[in-house]
Amino acid sequence: EPEVTQTPSHQVTQMGQEVILRCVPISNHLYFYWYRQILGQKVEFLVSFYNNEISEKSEIFDDQFSVERPDGSNFTLKIRSTKLEDSAMYFCASWGQGTTDTQYFGPGTRLTVL
Amino acid sequence: DAKTTQPPSMDCAEGRAANLPCNHSTISGNEYVYWYRQIHSQGPQYIIHGLKNNETNEMASLIITEDRKSSTLILPHATLRDTAVYYCIVRVGDDKIIFGKGTRLHILP
Image (cartoon, rainbow over the protein chains, first blue to last red):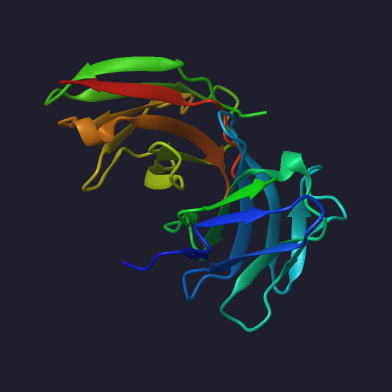
């Protein structure tokens, strides 16, 4: 069964450093998403991406965040200058088209900002 | 905010059917009902979805009321591995998923 993969599984960084989280969506999917989950809290939507541009973003997704699909297979989330409050699980998801399809989530990257 | 209402927690004995209710009284005609679950801190896992007809797959059954204002997810023979937070979500196609707090299902041995 096709699946969404994410790397790394755990990233530890110092406050103020840049991090890039990577995702490989399901190959024939066209819509891509990032969500995050702070420990003990709900899963929150960050951004959706379609046709090489952001289609929607939440208030959380400020100028410190960016997304890119650099090579047609990877989908990345960059945080330019990490803050302590960016520590969370980050989930990538992808969706095909058609009413029989749904969003499939990756296993997540645990980001720890020290 | 999530458009659904779910009980915060439920218990079910192992081997019995787990019936998880969800209210979505403001659902629109083109919105589907989706169920996901999250085991510990893993990525949310898709379970099933439907529009108005009842649906069944290898994991679960989804019963949607005729007026579509509520639904029930049924895990026919719950196991300890079904212990998770279950999310009922209404949305259309490419729309983002808005997660509520879900129902924390405890399977009791």
